[in-house]
Image (cartoon, rainbow, N blue to C red; front, side, top):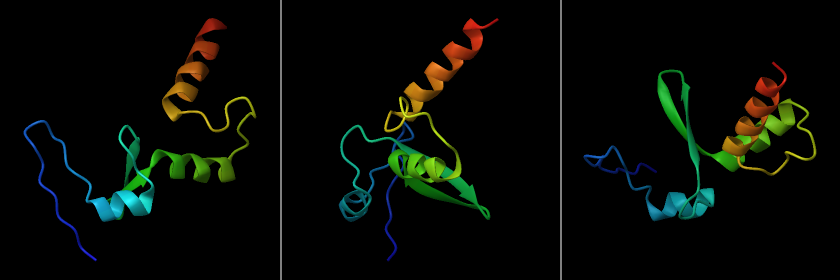
Length: 82
Protein backbone atom coordinates (compact mmCIF):
# COMPACT_ATOMS: atom_id res chain seq x y z
CA UNK A 1 0.00 0.00 0.00
CA UNK A 2 1.27 3.49 -0.83
CA UNK A 3 0.24 6.56 1.14
CA UNK A 4 0.98 10.22 0.43
CA UNK A 5 1.24 13.25 2.65
CA UNK A 6 2.11 16.90 2.08
CA UNK A 7 4.99 18.72 3.76
CA UNK A 8 3.83 21.95 5.42
CA UNK A 9 5.80 25.19 5.49
CA UNK A 10 7.02 24.11 8.94
CA UNK A 11 8.37 20.84 7.53
CA UNK A 12 5.62 18.78 9.12
CA UNK A 13 3.73 15.89 7.58
CA UNK A 14 0.60 14.07 8.69
CA UNK A 15 1.05 10.34 9.08
CA UNK A 16 -2.09 8.68 7.67
CA UNK A 17 -4.40 7.23 10.31
CA UNK A 18 -3.94 3.66 9.05
CA UNK A 19 -0.18 3.92 9.54
CA UNK A 20 -0.53 5.59 12.96
CA UNK A 21 -2.82 2.80 14.14
CA UNK A 22 -0.57 0.06 12.80
CA UNK A 23 2.53 1.65 14.36
CA UNK A 24 0.78 2.50 17.63
CA UNK A 25 1.52 6.21 17.21
CA UNK A 26 -0.44 8.68 19.31
CA UNK A 27 -0.21 12.43 19.86
CA UNK A 28 3.25 13.15 21.22
CA UNK A 29 4.76 9.84 20.05
CA UNK A 30 8.34 10.15 18.90
CA UNK A 31 9.53 8.70 15.61
CA UNK A 32 12.93 8.18 14.05
CA UNK A 33 13.96 8.29 10.42
CA UNK A 34 16.52 5.71 9.34
CA UNK A 35 18.29 5.91 6.00
CA UNK A 36 18.47 2.49 4.33
CA UNK A 37 19.68 1.97 0.77
CA UNK A 38 18.93 5.56 -0.24
CA UNK A 39 15.41 5.59 1.22
CA UNK A 40 14.13 6.59 4.65
CA UNK A 41 12.25 4.31 7.01
CA UNK A 42 9.91 5.75 9.62
CA UNK A 43 10.06 3.88 12.92
CA UNK A 44 8.48 4.53 16.25
CA UNK A 45 11.01 5.39 18.91
CA UNK A 46 9.66 2.53 20.99
CA UNK A 47 10.43 0.08 18.16
CA UNK A 48 13.97 1.47 17.84
CA UNK A 49 14.56 1.08 21.57
CA UNK A 50 13.34 -2.51 21.40
CA UNK A 51 15.82 -3.16 18.57
CA UNK A 52 18.62 -1.56 20.61
CA UNK A 53 17.70 -3.58 23.69
CA UNK A 54 18.21 -6.71 21.60
CA UNK A 55 21.65 -5.47 20.49
CA UNK A 56 22.98 -4.03 23.76
CA UNK A 57 22.51 -4.62 27.43
CA UNK A 58 20.65 -1.58 28.72
CA UNK A 59 20.80 -1.03 32.48
CA UNK A 60 17.52 -1.95 34.12
CA UNK A 61 17.06 1.57 35.53
CA UNK A 62 17.02 2.96 31.96
CA UNK A 63 14.85 0.35 30.26
CA UNK A 64 11.54 1.66 28.97
CA UNK A 65 12.59 5.32 29.27
CA UNK A 66 12.36 7.93 26.55
CA UNK A 67 15.49 7.84 24.36
CA UNK A 68 16.07 11.57 24.82
CA UNK A 69 16.01 11.14 28.60
CA UNK A 70 18.41 8.19 28.41
CA UNK A 71 20.84 10.21 26.28
CA UNK A 72 20.58 13.24 28.59
CA UNK A 73 21.28 11.08 31.66
CA UNK A 74 24.23 9.41 29.94
CA UNK A 75 25.70 12.81 28.95
CA UNK A 76 25.22 14.18 32.44
CA UNK A 77 26.88 11.13 33.97
CA UNK A 78 29.77 11.22 31.47
CA UNK A 79 30.50 14.92 31.82
CA UNK A 80 30.17 14.96 35.61
CA UNK A 81 33.24 12.70 35.78
CA UNK A 82 35.52 15.30 34.18
